[in-house]
Image (tube, rainbow, N blue to C red; front, side):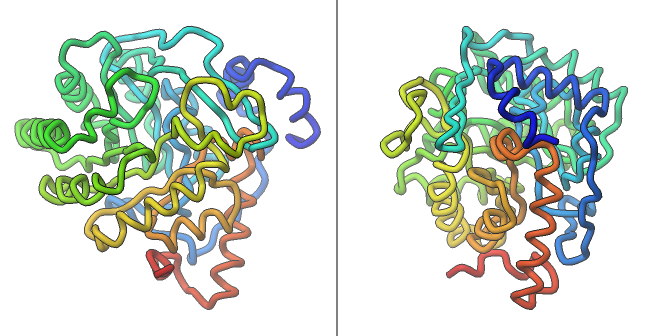
Length: 346
């Protein structure tokens, strides 16, 4: 059905189309195909069994409105947000741009959020039906960015299976400065101290930029290990990689996601995996839209993968297609469980 109406959807403004998709998911308007369940793609993450390693990246369900509808589509895990302490509009519209020939999106949303209180109430009244993460970040005009992360940590630590600390959006001024060693050290130290105060063992994941320099990789990895961070998401959108794009929207300012990010993401996953050596999990993001693209992320070192742009171009039943292809790949290679394939590329 999606293939028949995609051309009509793509005539709409991208943000309007997204709002309509959220409404459709709320009312379960999407017909659900039988998605393939297979023990070869099952795993246990943060003490929770998941049916497959494919998740929805933060940014799709920003305000935690349709996560259980997404679970019904067959995703193994869902991450909502980015959630900020206070409600904020984000950047001026237009702020989402399709690059159809490139199977890509550029966005400069800027952490538009209903705020922590509204989202807390929403999740509290609708318990997630699977592995569930909340992505948190600071308000645009905050005077204490670390303080904003701690506000969200205190708010959500008892509602999520993990919390993602987003330091990677290119659309919030100076947010990526947290990739600097001293600033990241201060942030992770404050989070660890707050976790101790709360007496919580909520897993913490750091979401990084794909645009970091090679010299930063080892420093970031060392700090993740120093503070016993549980995982890293590689990666958010890029404000580079425009050279070979075809669509005129490549000139728009913002973060690029989709197929043009795939190779860059895979290389970065591989570099981090060689340093981290299974000590923390890697969640791979960027260009995921098929069983092959998932498998590539995993052999480069990812335990889990996330998608967002792939669903825009392939439709809501993308996970059914991916899981079928992925199980066939594993079977053809004689792999009994996907965990055996992690990091096997080199």
